[in-house]
Amino acid sequence: MKSLFKTAKGKQDILQLYDQKLDELKIPYDSFKVKTSYGETNIISAGAPSNPPILLVHGSNACAPIALETYPNIYKNYRVYAVDVLAQPNKSAETRLSMKDESYGKWMNEIIRNLELDAVTMAGFSFGGLVILKTLEYDESRIEQVFLSAPAYIVNGNPLKALFKVFIPMKQYMKTKRPKYVEQFLAEVFTERDEFGIQFLSKVFLEFDMDFTPVPVINAKKASGIKTPITIFAARHDVIFPGKKMLKRAKRIFPSLKAGVLLEHSKHVQSKDDNRRIEEVIMS
Image 1 (cartoon, rainbow, N blue to C red):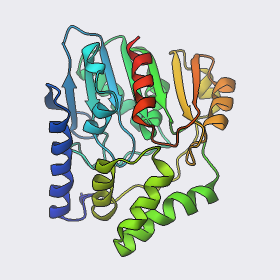
Image 2 (image 1 turned 90 degrees about the horizontal axis):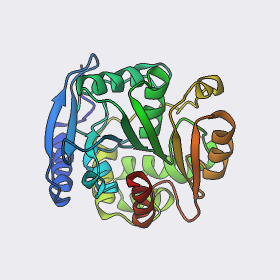
Image 3 (image 1 turned 180 degrees about the vertical axis):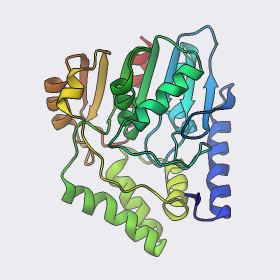
Image 4 (image 1 turned 90 degrees about the vertical axis):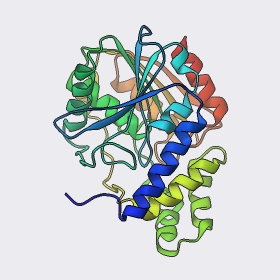
């Protein structure tokens, strides 16, 4: 199978940034791989094994250390398992799954069973929200509760806005390698400037074969069958998955929606302050 990393040097550079971020966190951790029918999945664990388990699922074009950084204190209350999602710029297998079928749900349930976990909390951002909702659709029997931040798979934004504000700057950077286009992208997607985000995405946009498949939205009938308590943090100024639109639909289709919070000043990627607020809710 052809690698999703475009060059060996590009892969080395991206994984070097991965390790750099992990070291910067100053969190005691273990790293190991879990075998699944879709390939090996890399996991970073932290926190006392006696703590209740939580699975962290990062967004697209990201990795487990970024998920750990988002909620840096969560390991104090939970046994954390930060998962490197398949076919993303990280250390898991490069098997690209379909967003339209049950593959992501089956994959994540295999991980949960292989880790012998029960009463699991799950927390995910953006594309990680799609993965979590697919997990619930497939088999929610081992999941206790989920927390979703600006999740994919509930609503989509205006495609023309997303095209001009997000995808065209990204494509322009890939074509010209001019940093100003990465800055334009980040200004629309990130609530506050993130130096590591600039470094990491500058490499990923050039050196990784990203998935531009349109993101589907969950069927209302499938949503109505989910029993697990769901908390959603939606971002008012999110161009990709608009917050007000998201909460309106979520309240209509999820009978198990426990809470819906609109982050008034947030773009798609939350600020450190908003992430701290979310972390406090999860830890409480």
